[in-house]
Image (cartoon, rainbow, N blue to C red):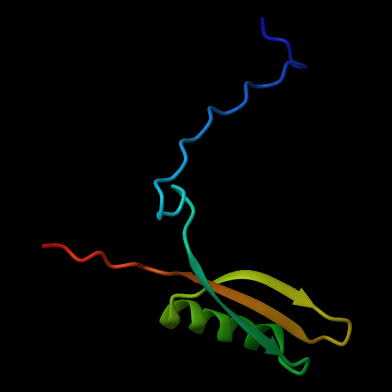
Length: 86
């Protein structure tokens, strides 16, 4: 029988990345900040962000809502590095 108060074993240590390469599972992102005025409705903001995601390959990273209704939105997308072969 297992003890419910017993903690799970910690995850195994990960290998460090090779010099000059990012750690495995950690991508490099570029960020874009947008400030949206308070007059935009939620549906207009949703449509705007959906267009950015669909056509610009951006994903939502963070939203900050201010007291007056203004929104600051951070979008991110992965930077794809092309390695030359041959």
